[in-house]
Image (cartoon, rainbow, N blue to C red):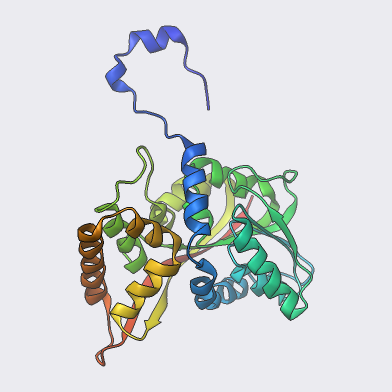
Length: 286
């Protein structure tokens, strides 16, 4: 980030300045949110997304792969099952430990390391491929996180992601929560990573090729009420949102989530079958 001289600061009225987000404080709160509940219970239901991304990237066995914001290891396991040499990273220690146990159970030789998506502890161009499924999109400093994906990938290497779209079910769930809990000032929604125009603007100048495909993940739950109960109990951001509200506010948020599910639900038997759109992104770095 370039410095602004004192002369420039005094020449422009203070009202022109938007406050800089306190990224350190925001990440501390995010870490606590993702460590609350039990995201791994929900994360394992998303395993198919990692498998599909691994197929789309079509890496050679033996490729070195960095999984950024790996959570409990969905993409990590998918690439390791295809004989890639995977380094799995996250800044939430408990989630990384859950991924470690999953890899051990399958006998997969994965390297695990605590790491911040905005400041990776590796030399530039260290990996043949860099991946993230519903992970890096939650980094508060989005520009820095994007730079790190590019910095970690070698020239002619691949970057692959799965990111929820703004208009899809999960993107709209973020928006619904934001009506009840004011998000940190100065931050864009994580779902901007699921906007193809933003992806193109952010990455294209660094790439040799870019392929974007919109896919759906199907959320299948016993009922809409079951989904709300599971997410308010285990999914960190929703869990923390409910904890921050009084009884009346919790009831209002639950009702808004039920209304959101009703908009997307394709089940007709009382269960929940909700497609949630995401972008599957495969880039080749120039």
